[in-house]
Image (cartoon, rainbow, N blue to C red; front, side, top):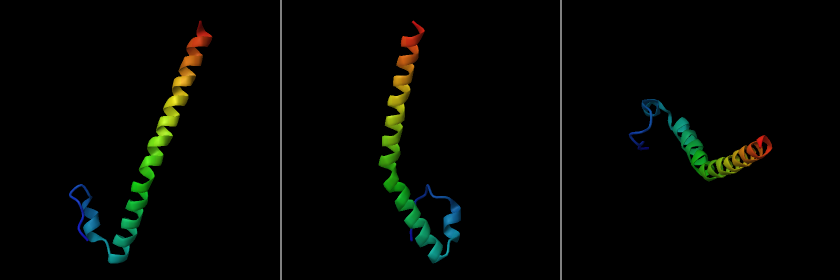
Length: 59
């Protein structure tokens, strides 16, 4: 298995079984990226709403 330069040196010491499991985990993390982005967008909207209501209440 070939690893990208950005990967840590520890990956070169993995057994075949460990490398396969790390590859599964990496794929799962990659698949979660769109969900993390969506969660952040939702959180940003909630923060904007809270700031708006704080300003509105402060007037």
